[in-house]
Image 1: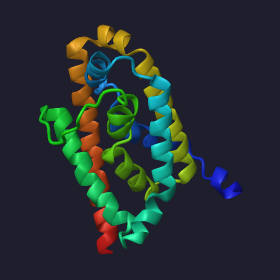
Image 2: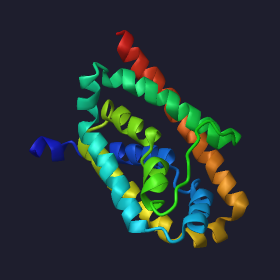
Image 3: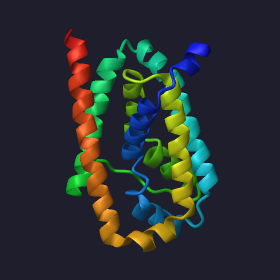
Length: 197
């Protein structure tokens, strides 16, 4: 337990937080969130945040065990995750749609908001990928930080949309898309190298 807390590193925490922030892309999802509020009525920001937190922590704790059950290494999963992140980055940068998510009604706070928009495939693969590079405590704190950011953004979606405008949101998506693309390339090359060694 002492080793767990001693592994805290502010640099790792910052990097892990930025990776999750780019992958979750809650700012880039503002237009979709506004659409969800219009089509399915009021969205529970707290419920969406707590459900996504539970999904992320659950996969963070059990993800590696699930992989071992199927005989998959963390590195190979990280490489697969890097490809998904790469595709997500292309969506953000080029404005293409590679993933199709259906929008539901009354359960919009959970599906599709908490899953898969916030805690989707990209987030899950990122968590496993991060475990291959950073200490657990730094990733866990990064999860809580990002869920806190998600909650704040969900509570102030309308204000953010008005403040940023369509152009501002589009620019944010491009910027975080480029960051995510660079992260995907780094994850792919570093883990592929480990696999072949």
